[in-house]
Length: 139
Image 1 (tube, rainbow, N blue to C red):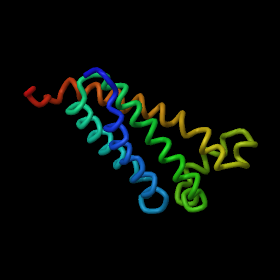
Image 2 (cartoon, rainbow, N blue to C red):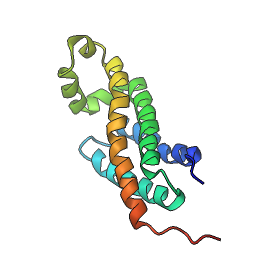
Image 3 (tube, one colour):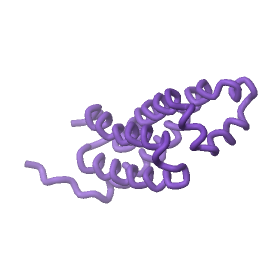
């Protein structure tokens, strides 16, 4: 089958939803990258094991859906998220003045591009995993 597995994309994007909620106040920003590395590895393995083609596209789309979850959660809980993530405040300081004054708007504007950048990373890792992970035998 040569189609996109939307069910798998949605299911794996739930890691993004969990991380979106957990990074609001539970997971500090200095530890967060380790969680993302683990999530990327798990997602790539599952994609490689369950998809027969379009590995890169599956990884890319998982990350896009992740970015939607993350953006929504961080915008809704910005008053809690931003004080726990001074790196976001610093990044916001480099944006045009109009965006600095509207932090939630800048989070919305930047959410999808960040999702796309990380989508390229996840897509490449899924593609690499597809070359390494053995598929179950056809029945």
